[in-house]
Image (tube, rainbow, N blue to C red):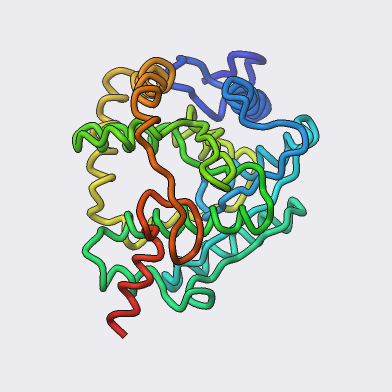
Length: 305
């Protein structure tokens, strides 16, 4: 297997394109792809303060590293935020990875320990809620990223959602006929109330592409799976997506790109006027209900004490 550019031994094969790259030219390919995504959706502009969510996994670590490299070119600042969910050894390893990478890059890292800040952990909330742990985790992360973005006066929130993450969400929402979620989901989510826009620069990247990036740059990342991922519905949907991709390389990329280009804008145009944004009566952040999902979770925990 040889690099398509220089004919040196290749380290990465891009299945959907039928090409292979050496380390040097794969890095250029990866960065070019991210830049193209940023420009296509006008994700970043001069003077932005970008709050990057880092979990320690390959996606968020590759996102942090890539955006750190591009900050001079696009003239923005980066701040990283890690959320300790109270998952024992898994959380300890995740935190150390984030600290090591941020120290290496000289990027400010904010660590939010939800036990210390809110008096709860993900396992504790999972015991008192009938919602799946993955759903609770998503609520926690979205709330904390949003609240800290406001505190830090960030102008963008960046997350490491990759192509497969987007495909899983789209297929899952379609099976539930969740039109509102499908309409709202986008690689660039406009500001809501006093919250800054959310961006997903990796939305066109397959998982093996972000994995190859962290390996090329010898970046540490958390290899273990989250203890709550075992048996998760999302993994079953992921298996179907991987089967489709194995049969028809590039099909998942085409599906997601086509959805966001041709369908999502039409859905949002039809439904956006019906979306009502309120202020949570408890915390004051934007919410679709009188009380936001996160504050409802906290109230549920307090009732059991």
